Length: 219
Image 1 (cartoon, rainbow, N blue to C red):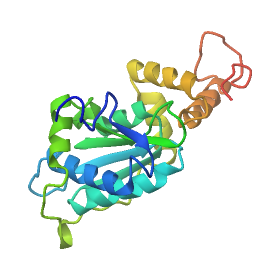
Image 2 (cartoon, helix red, strand yellow; image 1 turned 60 degrees about the vertical axis):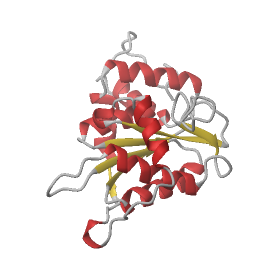
Image 3 (cartoon, rainbow, N blue to C red; image 1 turned 120 degrees about the horizontal axis):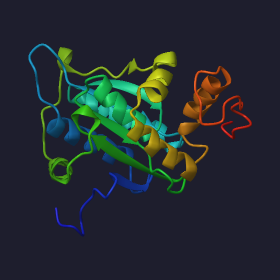
Image 4 (cartoon, rainbow, N blue to C red; image 1 turned 45 degrees about the vertical axis):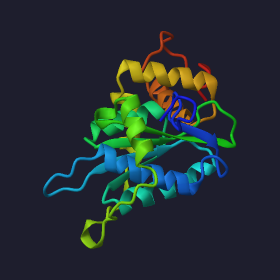
């Protein structure tokens, strides 16, 4: 695709949810991504991690993405509301074939976006994005019967907190800190609350020993 008409921008596909980024486009993108990013292995279905930020439109877009992936035979692990770097980390941590994040970062609330991560949670190369875009509208054979993917897998409770706070590498935490400054009430809020709990329990220090999370501005 040429640079002017290219669907993918610098951070995935973004636009006004329901207008530019519709449920139909989200479904088609997920089907195309599954065709490009998965490798069929004997005895197992491909797996994708799907996360989103708290925008209301994330709910219908998530449903469309999960439906598209499952229709191609991909099992979906729904991570729920998490920061973008945490979804990338989970993609690698869980050994998924690829990841999907529904977020438009600090863009207006009516916007949303779809960002794909390659295996290991790595940023998707431009060439792969172009390949996904090229697959849009290309007829494919949907999965049927036992080959249909499942969309009910979830990452829950303590495990989510441990992955997003305890296991994320320094680069991921630094990136999330940047997003926290941009959108303090976004999906990072749950992570901040857990950080505050660790601070108050004396299990984590930010250079000011003894300062509770609330006084440190984390709540």
